[in-house]
Image (cartoon, rainbow, N blue to C red; front, side, top):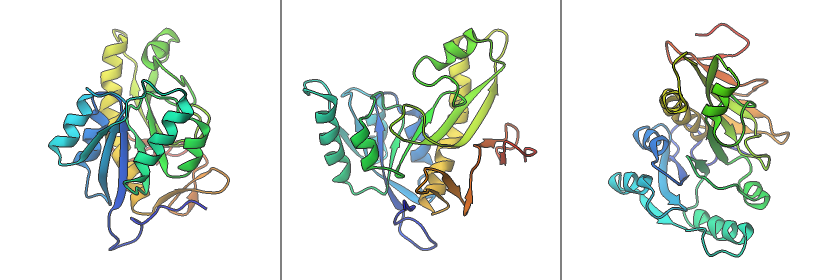
Length: 236
């Protein structure tokens, strides 16, 4: 059974986290700003050498590494080296923060119950890319973001926490993306903190367990108070 790792429990040392990025790293920055919520970022790894997130890591005194995927004969070969690099930092949790690579089943299973992702849609809607444009094309009135455990199914792992934003009449994909991103910065550190302090885990049936209770549906961040409520209950 997966556990929350060495960061769980009062007085325990902070949980070691490795963050994978490919771009600007705004969600990484939100995690950097939240350090002290039971976790420490031991390393940031990018597959893109000029990703701005690497500069964010360096500015925060965090080890930054580049593992360029170009030149590898296969996705599996790259992921094998990626796993080796991640494991060299002995993390209790791996966090995907805009890492633009589809991971192999072998890599995902290696970190089963110890890997989180944030996706810019209200999963299970709009898995994959271009979520904001697709939401607008579909005439959605509400859009948002989801934090989920990673499983081999692309963007199909069990969802833990979501945040909604309204879709406005004059929205374009960029405006909608910017509004969603502000909510991402709230929900991702919160979920990482839950995991790091032992409140959150994945059970053997791939169900998220929070505070000893199975999450039968994702939790929802309240848009006004930034509190959390079950989607089946009144928002707090």
